[in-house]
Length: 271
Image (cartoon, rainbow, N blue to C red; front, side, top):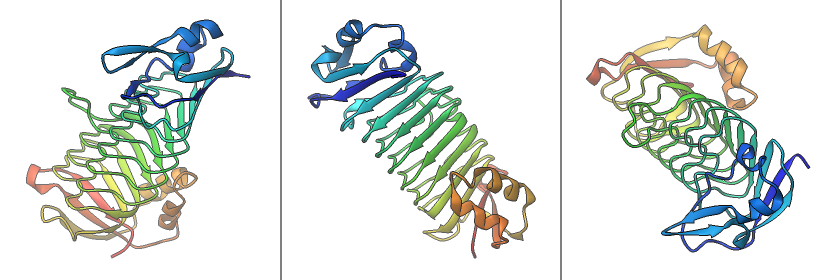
């Protein structure tokens, strides 16, 4: 095998801090040392073997199997290697990730990709609130990398986003793109209320608005935006619905947020 496989045998009673479970960290340990690895849960630490059956050996990849909804911080700070979660994931999935690949077959809780700087994060289900947002006391949210979510996302995705791309197959909750500084968020479904609230720069693309045009965005009319066509070609493998841009679907551009003298944009794939 090319890495360890951890099979969750029992749910922790309290959320478990899973950030020590990284391919690079575990690749330096033999099986017995991995089983003794202490993991924080509330005020106590738990040996990894109390919750997981460990298979495989050192390598550049890590597989975590089972219902991992109480495992927080999976892939936190990941810089290299790959992590596959065969189920759901807890809070702060991929927080601070700077490289490597994280793939979750199920859904993720709040604050996935918080403060992300690079790498790729793929979520097969839905994601909670503050996807790609800023960590506490941090000036910026997501600063690089690619996030792909097949389902819906919660509120305030991309809050204070500085760079990078978020692709969403479903719909977005309220205030998607709030306080964006740069970067791109593309939503295949509907945007919730208050999209791009207090946006400075950046691009939010969506199939439709669910709550009417924001009052602080100006209608810039229809456009044939070549840069978006080029972007759609590059990203259509992860977001097939973006291919419609290349087929000449009408694009309506709203500019703002004028309340903060913003120069960002919301681009709609239909009137």
